[in-house]
Image (spheres, rainbow, N blue to C red):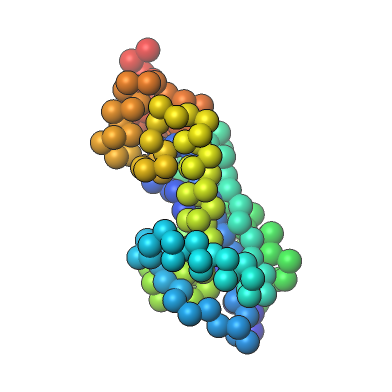
Length: 188
């Protein structure tokens, strides 16, 4: 039975797209060290990401844009990115296991598992791919917008990021439906 794990990265950020990944692991090539991406160092995540891409039977990384997030809300955009990730697999799984408590609209049997990224290897693998891809996008944003510390805060609503928004303004990659961005926009 082929199981695909699905997880997202960047749902709670103030800037950037939300990413999702789907992974079908190969039982003949187990990957040692899979865990929730938040519990791993950046170096370990990057190493495991390469291992997953090399040894998994199939994997897919997708995203929903800032515009989609603002248009349909973060939950719906996350589910959209997850659906895209499942649809991007070149092998159709028998079942999809999704981290969290919501299931995207897909035609395959699926179950939501709260904290699945901690307990299900396939979801852990998806968590790692999504996080590494999202972090890479934030490093690119740091080059485009050097006045913002995207390589440090990765777009999350840290004190530093909020100070940068107040000092330098709102960028096109900021989620206009998220506070404090939304509140700042209403002041203009």
